[in-house]
Length: 126
Image (cartoon, rainbow, N blue to C red; front, side, top):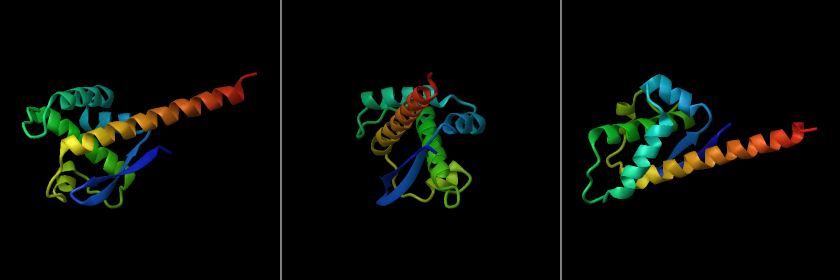
């Protein structure tokens, strides 16, 4: 299931998907914890200025990996198998415009999972 949202990148609407599979896929592909990485990125971007970015290369790579994985999850038939090939499709790609949308999408997915669990618990309670 999951939640799909289109985010504008370089003048194009790009689909991204968040689901319960994303943490596992991210861990398998990048050997990292997506929860920790998203929290770290969200905190870092709130402190930075788009015109004077002080984000390190590790943070930028984490962001690119998360964005790539969620885009590939949404549209595996049209998204290349590597983050590099996917990123090469764009002229510009602003972490300051895209990351807040990805964080919002992830939050919507988590809320959907919590709501579904509550409904299931109510149905099975006796």
